[in-house]
Amino acid sequence: MTSTVYLDFNASAPIRPGVAEAMTAAAGRGNPSSVHAAGRAARALMEDSREIVAALIGAKPSEVVFTSGGTESNHIALNGTGRKRILLTAAEHLSVRNAGLRGHVDRGFVAVDANGVINPGALEAALCEDDTPALVTVMLANNETGAISPMAEVVALAHAHGAIVHCDAVQAVGKIPVDVESLGVDLLSISAHKIGGPQGVGALFVRDGVRLRPSVRGGGQEKGLRPGTENLPGIAGFSVAAGMAKRDLTSHMTIAALRDRMEADIGAHAPEAVFFAKGCERLPNTSCFALPGVSAETQVMALDLEGVMISGGAACSSGKVAPSHVLKAIGADDDTASSAIRVSLGWSSDAAGIERFVSAWCGLRDRLRKNGKVTATAA
Image 1 (cartoon, rainbow, N blue to C red):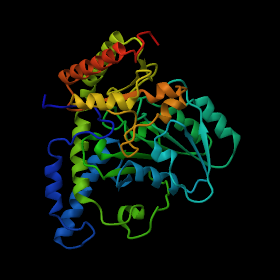
Image 2: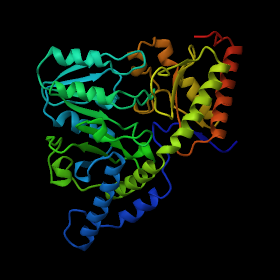
Image 3: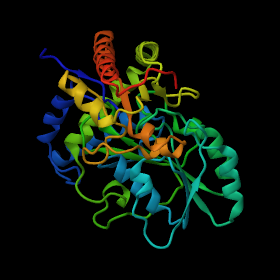
C-alpha cells in the first residue's frame, strides 16, 4: 500500500493549494523597508497580506504583528507587558509553560477541571489573592485534547481585576470562528503552519492601546516588536492559507462528523479505550484517547508502518513521545497518560482515511489483546 493517511493536523497541516506559488512569487520581491519601486511593491504585498490575516481573527491590520510563529508570539506577549505576575494553567502549551521570562516574575498556576479547562472560580480566587497587576494567559483550545476554554468569562474576570489577557489561539484559528472583539482579549497568538500555511511564520494580535516591550532590539520593523527584515515569502503564503481557512470554516461540521464516527467505532471495538475532554466543547477535528497498557510510542510506530500518521500527544518535543503534561494536569495516571494518542483531522481528511485509521488501530489492539497486552474491559 503506497498511499498514506495524514491525521496529525494539530502538529502541522499539509500546505494548501496556492501557498507555495505565492511564496515563490514573493521571493522575487525586494525588501519591504526599501523606498525604491521594488521595496514599495514588497511593502504593498506585505500590507495586503496583513489585511487578510487580520480578517481571519476579526482584527484591524494595524493590530497584527508578524512573527516567526506561535512560540515567538507567545514569548513576545509574556515578556512584553512587563507584568511581574503571570497566571496560567498547567495545561498550557510548553511554549507558555517553559517561556524564559525576564526579571523576577511570580508565575502561578490556576486549577483546571476534569476536561483540562480553566476553572473560572479558581481564576477569580487567584486574582483576589494579590493586587499586583497580572497577566493572565489561557489557550483558546488545547492542542492535545481540543478542549475549548471559556475565554469571554476569563477576560471578564481578568479585566475586572485590572489584568491583561493573552490567548494562545494557535490551535483554534481556522477550526472554529475566532474574533478578537467577541473574545475581548488584549493579545492573541496564531501560527501559519497550523492552517495549511508555511512553517516559520505567525502573528501576534496586539490590541490598540496595549503597550509591549520588544524581546530583541534592532530596526523598527513590525512596530519595533519584531525587528529584522520581514519573511515576505512566508507572510505571503500565510495570507493565502488564512483566506482559505476563513472561507472553509463551515467545512469543519463535516470534519466533526468524521471525528465523532471514528470515536464511536473505536469505543465500540475497544471498550477499554479512554477518551479525553469528551465532556466539554472541543475543536471539531481533535480526538485524544488512550489504550491503557500500550505506550503511545508503540501505537504511533505501528500505525506509521501501515501508512497512517498520528501523534502521541503534542508534537513539540523534538520527536520525543513522552507522557502528556496536559493529561497529567487533569488527573490521568502515568500509565494512561503514557498510552494516549492524538488524532487530528483537517482540510484534506476524508471518510476513507478515517476508515483506514480505525481498521489499523483496531487491528493493532486485537493483536495486542491476543498476546495478553490489552484487557478488554470498559474503563
